[in-house]
Length: 303
Image (cartoon, rainbow, N blue to C red; front, side, top):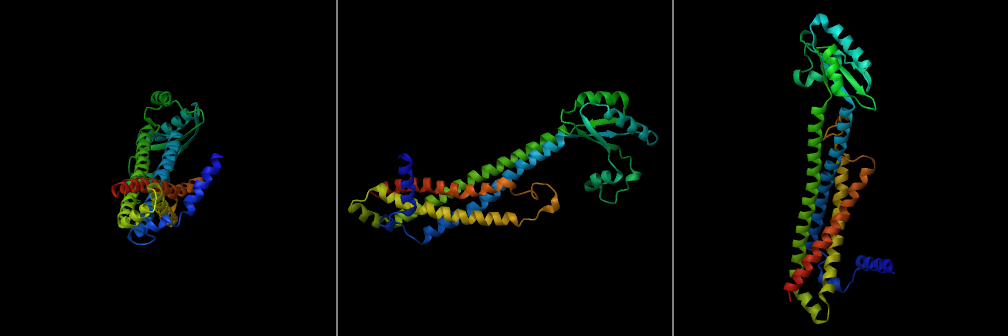
């Protein structure tokens, strides 16, 4: 029975009351302002949501990749580099938790140094240490035990388990994700303020019509419901349009050549594409609450 009553209320809200809606201007400044504000804020909300989702996704990826890998850096005189490298490889191959250990080639080390020294760096003329990439197994690696073993058997080897890189990356991505969600809150707060101003303007402009409706017996709740319905549907329409435009803008963003970064990875993946559909619904709820409060307050002032 309760479900039937709720369905009837929703149906009545969508269909509306032609008599009550005569107090609500169908066009004009308030209608354009509501549609424009909802569309623009929904457009911005799509990008804020994409930033938050992308930052969370990249944070998990970076943390996962760095947590499963480590690097051994070997510094030794030229004549001892080969022996030290072989000794380090032998240590790693017999260390529990090490799935694989691989020497980085000169080309790979050159690529790592290119952002700082450029592509034409004479690698052979510089005392570049030898790097060994370690991939951990599922049971994990005891970094402290490996450091002590390398110190005893290969004095020139230093283990970097990427712990000092993981924490700043995770913190930065977490702040970006928080910034995205906080921006969404601000966007909907501004949307609510704009819709409140538009509703107040519409109510004030139709003060005479409201007075006549009261004289023939219309209650304030009856009048307010017409304003709430009209402004809620306008906001839903504008937010849906802005959401669609925002999604299209995300789709045409450059991919960055496959590099995973905050900008090139901005967007949604898989089921997360459903998130933008929430934006028009939230816009409708914000419009409903804002218009309801504005209508009740302004109708009291017009008595």
